[in-house]
Length: 132
Image 1: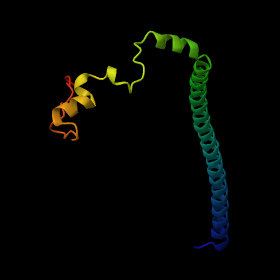
Image 2: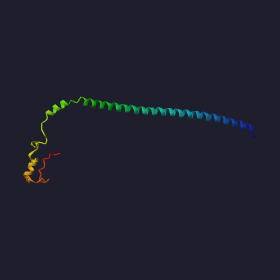
Image 3: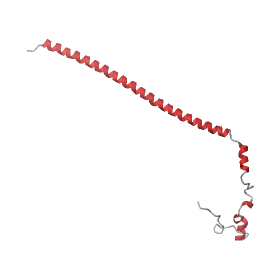
Image 4: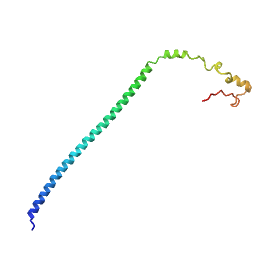
């Protein structure tokens, strides 16, 4: 025999249990989502914090290098540099032909080719080239 009110109350009881289970599952899911969001935000904060720290270190080092370069330029002694230049051989005016080897002076070409002609590349003595 079937008992309609018994089946109805059992069905109602099952719906009540399912509703409670669904509510509990929904609450657990919401808690899991909240924990996930918190962890995600902490991870993002850590990533950006590390990035900013690295950038600050990089720019601090760059500032040190620029400061050192500025200080070196500021401390540059023109007079001392000119004194060092005095130790170098003085060639005078570089356009003065007395410092140019005789084989490379224009008069040499005139003697080889004659007074009115320009030297051709094949008749011009090439300078001695050392091993490179």
